Image 1 (cartoon, each protein chain N blue to C red):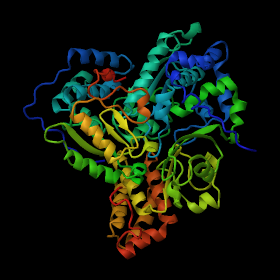
Image 2 (image 1 turned 135 degrees about the vertical axis):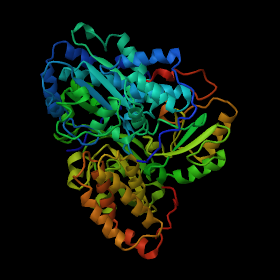
Image 3 (image 1 turned 90 degrees about the vertical axis):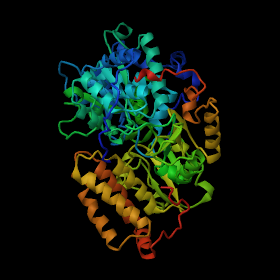
Image 4 (image 1 turned 30 degrees about the vertical axis):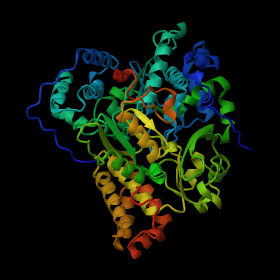
Length: 434
Length: 199
């Protein structure tokens, strides 16, 4: 089956009028929520999203409808926290979704809130994103004025308030329970799970946490149907499109909305203009910094596909959709070291395994890169790896281990060469760049 | 994670929000069923007013939210955008995460240091510029990316940054480059933006 090349969530990106509510309405905007409020049962909306196969676009790829169905139907307030704390290195889609089509996000939020019976939603936007926050605030003001948001929406009896909340600079607040802590005005320390946020979340109330891109898909699923959505992509569990954020050494870096199930090779060579300067590919990080890197062999010979399940089978993950492409001139020790330094910086410090582990890994990798590594370093790294997996409150530690574990096993020779030569064998063209 | 000390609390003046900011804070507090959720927005507002977060700010915010100053300090020290030292009129944040590094962010950072005669992690003596190397800014398709105050500048070169700094030095307006262009007003020279909103 050939994959359908259809733009869903980026469909209005070339239409600057859609920034304003009139332009959004002119392209079918707010019709989806209007239709639902006209008499569709919330439970049927959850079923629709379940059968569409929509999976979370933030990182874990958890089925969206299933997540919603975990929320107990109890009295009292329930909340939606929109995860717009985009910070996974290599990822830049939510920023553009908020900048270029903020009403689409608002309509998606309304649909989620209606389905789950939520009357208050908070959009947690990373602090650096001032322009996107401003775009969303402006769109919200328009939507309030038109009566799409607020009390008794379109006379249906359904009420929903939507607020923005600005972050203050912490990657870990993109982790869903870290986000909740931060939204409660505290340090963004992730919570132990269970209980899951669906049951005990924001202010200890049932809470749904959805990514911006996930929500942006909802108006289209409601308008065109679950079957249509399920028909885009490779199978019913990997349906729809993804906003692939392609960066690094490709000829045309940028945002590409493509159906799930495309191979990594097709993405790079048919959509991103191939490798920059015709250089050879060395490694691809397929789903943000936490996703283990793929080698050129995996890309060209194994033809790894970029959907959730194919990447999982290849030992990596779809993650956040951040695709970082590295060519033959890139030093793998330096790349791993740069990312390890990132994880060290962003570890919240709660769990000693993560706090100390990320620091040790970062330090050892920096030492190897400087040419000061000792033979034992590789063994030490290998022994740190399993200890950093599955032993902490959240998965930041695991992410760091998966990252350097993949670099170390797949490019072992390069690490060894650094130690035996006492310098970078590549004479990296990016000295101290990282 | 780095250890930072509680800022020196010597002879600081007492901090009070301006009446406008105090009203803004009340508006923000009203958004949440639990007041404490407005603690970080309150700190952001205070930082906008004072330039950075002093111990007097933390004590005042602690009083408003009925928590201890150390509790507030715990929050302040966690978030990189909450500053306990003065930063420049123009705060230059150079992304040095992997995607930007692959596209020459390291070299770019050194060029910017030389151009501004200011080391990374420092504020220039005249208070005009400060430079910070930061983790992923979330604009990797436009690498290398630099953020000056609220504006993103994507796919920049030392030459482009030189022009931007030149304009800022002369007090001329500078517009963002990249996706921010869709909505952002120009930096400097333009009328005051409504950036006080804090959501």
